[in-house]
Image (tube, rainbow, N blue to C red; front, side):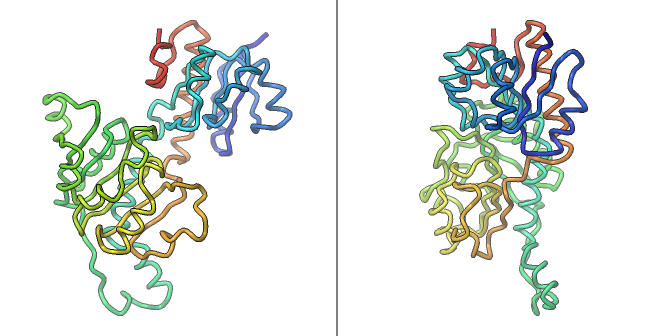
Length: 324
């Protein structure tokens, strides 16, 4: 019997790449979670691949007794029941940085859009208000200090892009680089509150866990300057949304660019939607056409590794004991 890959995704491009890149000698079943097709395939599945962290619960392993690997197409896994995976001895792997280019580009997109008031300018032109009848005050990125919180693959790529714009970059991460590594990347470490005080723009690139939930709240926003900009392409609950709204309304900080929210989709009565000094996107920083192919490529590489009896790549830190 061929090894079975159960592939779950809401993105048609990822499904198309799944069909294109599926390794020979495997049975690929693309199914929507909760359907009869999914339920029937799960009991005989060797590998569960997709945007599936919400599916990682005890009942998954009760049915999927043959599972050898949970391979996420996402970077985040904050909805997964890690203890359930640990009990079942099934590794959970993230996407190996497959969306890091997409997210880092989106972070720079938000920095530029906020600094140049892109949305306001667009609306003015569409509304027949050439320059809004007055030239808006916009800013360059060059010379502005970027503070990166979380220096994983996305954080590092964001730093490189920012440096190409002439931005000095400082960072904070629980895994501090050596001085030689900092020299090679052109970065300098700062303590967290020190970074908030020094940075003109703060870009968040941390996972969501108990240490990062509410990482940016009222006190942290007060540490930032009144001309500072906050960029969040990580997870919504990393920021206290009420505190951020109040800070934007009262001028504690100048502006924000957000791809993520505490509740998604964000409700229509969210006061953030009414503010002129915030630029919003719908948690779409990562899912580009190119990143979908990279995610699927990494996923199937891991599937083949595990099938050969090798240790999977990119096992999440919480399950480090499963790395062999």
